[in-house]
Amino acid sequence: MTELTARELLVMLYQAALDAVDGRYLVSQWCRQHNKKSFTHCVAIGKAAAAMLQGALDCVPSLQKSLLICPASKITRQLKKNKAVTCLASSHPVPDESSIAAGKALLSFLSTVEQKDALLFLISGGTSSLVEVPVDNITLEQLQKINSYLLASGKDIHQVNAWRQQFSRIKAGGLLNWIKAAAVTQLLLSDVKQDKAEFIGSGLLIKSSLTPAADDYLSAFRVAAGNTESPVPDQVEPETFIIGNIRLAMQAVHEAAKAEGLNSIIHDEFLEGDACKVANDLYEKLKQAQPGIHIWGGETTVKLPQKPGVGGRNQTLALAFAQHLDEQSGLHLLAAGTDGVDGNSNCAGAVVSGYTASKAGSMGFDIKAEIEKANAGMVLMATDDLLRAEQSNTNVMDIAIAYKLGL
View (cartoon, rainbow, N blue to C red):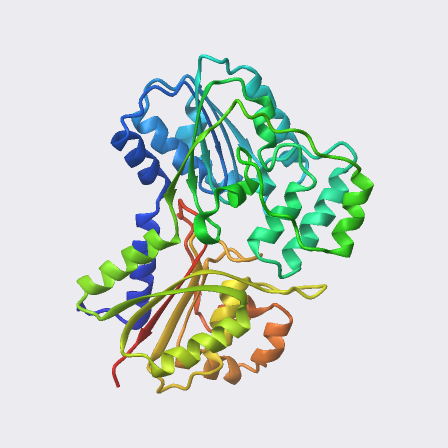
């Protein structure tokens, strides 16, 4: 193995994961492999949409017009200068006026697409908030309350998106009502468990099969909205392809670890549920595990207090894991979102070791209390354990990479 510190090694492996599921690379690769050079129009929506659209522009010369809806920070100068691309910056993770404007722009764009055209959709996580056409009896203020509640509720992404679909005219296949093109293809970067396409971006082009679980708070909004169901046309059947997922990222970590001469194990267990409980479970498993690299994927949850601090589920998981470590444990853990963002922070996650908790304690932090305040990010900033990934061009959930030294 090259001379890397444990942190440097884990960051290098994380970067290998991001490279393997880079949106630009995956879209370009798919288009070349399938000899798809005849698309006339493209719609790209999501946190990785700018990179995905650039991948299409790289190798599909037939594209006449494209619409890009993504966070402002992801829109490149190259895309802004392209006169064939309309770039719209929108809001994440809670929709705002720009999300509604993006919804109107999307419907307007689709109205110019004719039956003879070949339409390409590029969808990644974040779409649910970035573009919206709410049902008639739901205001933007109500929509924001619904989304804020969902994000703080601790519900998994399937349930979050199942509820989002209840208040939208374009989710759960509803967008098909505005599509005239006979040929529609969608390429998806999966940020959901089991790669269920109907929940990626809340399924703009796919009917939903999941009924949301009972929730009194949300049900009150649903009743107030009245009958919002509209039939989804059967004549349009988009071709759907999952071009990237967390498994692909995990495999890249595995291969990079082996290239460094390390024992590496991919764990099939999907990380989900409360981040602190997952951290405890990982520690118990790693105590008994063989030395080397251990890789998991998934998406945990955090139930937020009324006034949360700074951080996200990955920083919470990492700090909760660090609580168990002493300086001689030989365990290091990276927990990060592949989209480069974790909660309300500007970091992807964190890399912790046996020194994290002791350093935090010496600074006067009560780790348990800070976790309860959803303030893991402030502690990890103080201990210099945060992980940044400003240049992420993907979004395939979260990854946890542990390095256990042979003592």
